[in-house]
Image 1 (cartoon, helix red, strand yellow):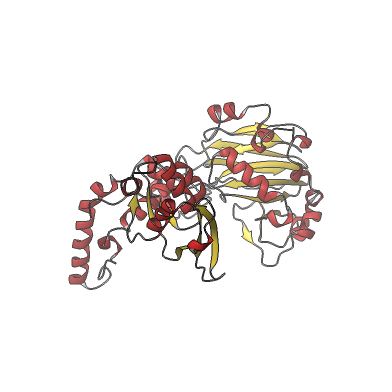
Image 2 (cartoon, rainbow, N blue to C red; image 1 turned 60 degrees about the vertical axis):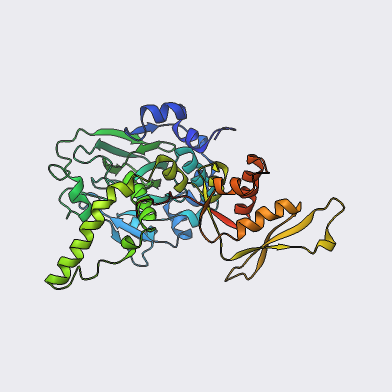
Length: 415
C-alpha cells in the first residue's frame, strides 16, 4: 500500500476513487489485479499464510459446503476448518477479525472511504480445495473478495429479476424468504438465462460485487481468500427508522393495537383505530426532511458540528450544573462551574469544569433547567445580550459535557 493511499484506493488501483464510484460502484462488478504487496499489510499477515495456519488461530463460527453438489452452507458445530478442508469441502470462516488485530482499523477506514455506516462491514475467509468452490447464488450484501493464495475462477452475472435485494442469500430453487415476495415483480430469480463473465483470481486480485450479483467459484488449486461483506442499511430501513422516531412522539402511535388478535369485535375495533392512524400518517411524515435524515445518520459528536438556528435540544435529567463558592472567584470575576453527570454504573462524575463569567454561568444554568425540548431561537431570545455565535459555542460545550442533548428528529406538529 503506497504512502498516502486510502484503503479503498489500494484495492481499486489503478482506478481513482472518483472513477470507481462514477463508473462501477454500486452497479457494476469491478476486478483489480496486481501484487499482494500493494494492499494493506494486514492481508499479508502470517496468520493468513494458508488455511492450516488460519485454522490454528480461529475459534469462531465455521460453515462448509460442497459447491459442486449443493448451494447450502452448513454450520459445523465445533468443526475444525483444516479438517473440513482436507475432506474436500469449501469452508467459510464467518469472522476472522479476532485473528487480525489491525482489522478494525482497516474496516473502519474502508467504511469511511465507501461512505457507509460504522460497523456495517465484517471480514471472513473462504478456503476451497482444488475442484471445489461455491455454488451459484447471490448475496444481499456488497462483497469484496481478495485472493490471498492459490487461484480460482469467479463466474459473475447480474440478477435481472431483483435489483438491490434485501434479506438473505438466495439460490435458484431455494424456499423464498418472506422479504423476497414483495421484491419479486415477475418470476423468482434464476440464473439459467444470465450471461456470466469469468474472472480469474490470483494472489493479489480484488473483486468488487454489488449485492444482487450471481456468482459461483471453482478453485484450480488450494485457495484462500478474504471476504469483506458490507451491509449498509437500505433507504427503506433508514427512512422507516426515522418515521419510528417521529411517531414515538404521538401517544396514539405508541399505544398497542389492543384486540387485533382477539375475537371479531375486538379485532374490528383495533382495525378502526389503525385506520385512523393511517389517515393522519401522510401529514405526519411530511415533518421529515433530508436534514433530519442526515442528522440521524451522524454520530453524536458530528451532529454538534451542525448546530444552527433550527437545532433543538433537551436537558438531560441525570446532569446538573454546580457553581463554586463566590469566595473562590479569581481576580477577573470568573467562577468555576462543573457539570456533574450521574452514571448508574460508574457513579457520579465530573464531565467538565470551566471558569466562566457569571452571565455565562446563567446560560448553562438555564440549559440545565429546561423541562421540555427547546430550540436555538429560545436560547437567543432568553439571552439576547450574547452574540449568536457565542451562544452556539456554549450549546456545543453543554452538549459535549452531556448537560443537554441535540435532538436528531423533527418535532411532530400534527399529533
